[in-house]
Image (cartoon, rainbow, N blue to C red; front, side, top):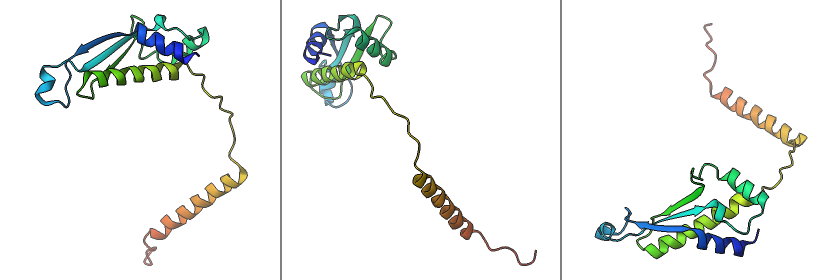
Length: 140
């Protein structure tokens, strides 16, 4: 994965739109378009191999729209420029993380000592709870 090429293709292909957003800003919220929405057509991404594109589509399948677009919004800050930078960095991280190959997990078994420690801790906990009980009724 060529990160530079990927970053350039994201910045070139993303469609940016602005709108009014809630949150901090006082009266400024009502008159300035600070919310940023990025729409990135997945087919326009460059710098990904076929396998990486497949992983990206698989991992982000819930975030990709029917129009084959990835949509990101940012409206946390009062300034449009800051929200735009946040949205682009979030989109870059999302695409790079989605295309990355996951580490292979080698399944392991707990060691004998760890199993014994677990059972010992369970016995101690059981005895502690048993000691909290009321003493048996002598009348019975």
